[in-house]
Length: 349
Image (cartoon, rainbow, N blue to C red; front, side):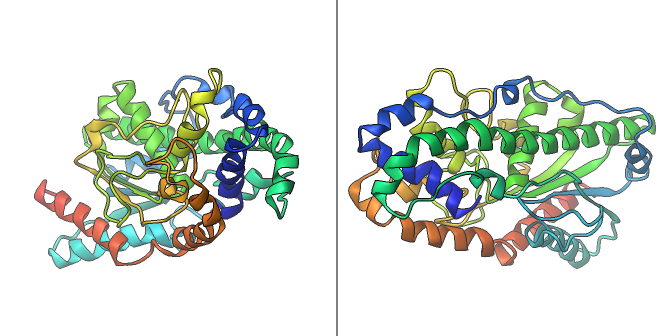
């Protein structure tokens, strides 16, 4: 998520917290789409879907599914160049299996969802240069962001959830017909990690044990839905007690609204289901504005942002944007892929 988005979601809410306009902004609350609050997507195997035939050939392989971040283009099912972050996970798996002398075919599949650009979130916003300007536009901008832009963004993200859930279901169904157990590793970056986070919770929450059991690894890179004290270990250096942008919205907005959901509806943001605690991993770097947002406004220690945090807000956002864009294609992410590969070998791959 971009610096401009974080500025408008958190910065203007912070200004609102110390002005009379705050009450109006808080009353508007978070509008993460009424349609987004529908039931978790149901896994189905669509008839005539060409991907179903491909799935049957992957039953005796390791299936690596990449879920791209916002604005990363789709250039084909096997083109990993579009997402260096998830490609680093794949590199770690391949290199470790080779080092262990394991010959294993890996079927690579780039999920073909939109991965809509963050620009959608900032459409129609005024971006005033001063605090006085922000006060003048905060109500209209808040409405545009929360009631128009964010629901559209969440709707597109949920398309990714539906596609991933459908793909997992067709893969499982095809392999069950062949009396085989598929092995799947998921890796997502930014918006893509939101997709995986929510799908894991959806299949666990609805008791889809077949789909749950075939997930052998899940990597959430720069996950905006990262929760404090998560059951999922973090390979990055962000503090365990910090959390991502989605829960920051919960902290700032949900207490003031009885009718609005967070960006992971229904309700507020939830941690990854405990079932996956032994196969899921986070990679979140300190000060990343997507997954370590709480530090920006000292939300761990204050009910409202402190004056000091507001004065340093713009500087911290710039740092956070840089960390988010450049911090996730190196050794830490590769190491997570290596760890997953070692776990697969230990399990008899």
